[in-house]
Length: 113
Length: 110
Image (cartoon, rainbow over all chains, first blue to last red):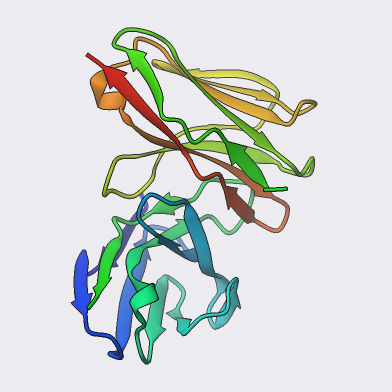
């Protein structure tokens, strides 16, 4: 069966520091991968999605970037965090074919001080 | 117009009652429809998906789809306090584009 791993679970970072969040998927190949952010009490905001290695689409302009160095690895990065980057970051995957659901990792709660 | 719209609630039902959650979507090209449950502080968990018009039942949950009206619903029978959560409706359009609603908060009162 497929599983998705996302770490760390919580992170506290000072303003201006760098960020790296990692997500890996097991038990499938060539998945579509997604990064979302969810502010407290709000809906999901799609940040990036990827249909293959090195293929990244950005949905919103921000100081974040994403990379997919391997088929089942998705990384969210920032060079300098802003206070507004606080939130709940979720990685998700879906099969690369058909109209099938997304499955989410456990998320990373990021607090910027 | 939002891609997916849900009533934010909160929706309160007594224990044992039927909870009815509704969702509308704007694009008739949407192909598949999903319901996720999200407990406070946790990630969304898939509970139901439906592709064809009509009803799909899984235990206490029933998903209903009406493509002509662009309407999806989730019924929860015999609601339990453990069903208290935010329920997210999502649609998948061609090109594997997912759109989520902002969620409906459900509280089941013991």
